[in-house]
Image 1 (cartoon, rainbow, N blue to C red):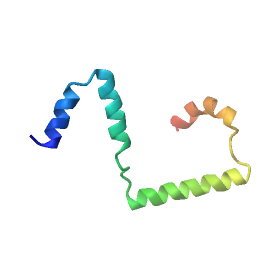
Image 2 (cartoon, rainbow, N blue to C red):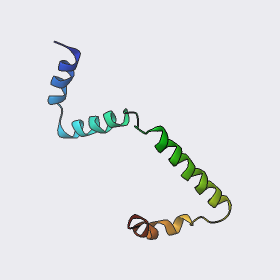
Image 3 (spheres, rainbow, N blue to C red):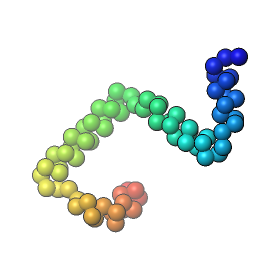
Image 4 (cartoon, helix red, strand yellow):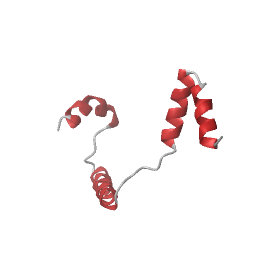
Length: 74
């Protein structure tokens, strides 16, 4: 029997809560998939955000929860 089959058999014996915990752990082990272009765009947005914060254009943390719904509908 292969190691993968042994692992699958062991997983079948786990409780739903244990399977859920295992799922979370397995997903945390995956490498994020991002293209070079996506990474460059993300870094550019982060740089822009850092410049805006340094210029005093940020939003106070306590105001963020009330603004989230506006941001997601844009």
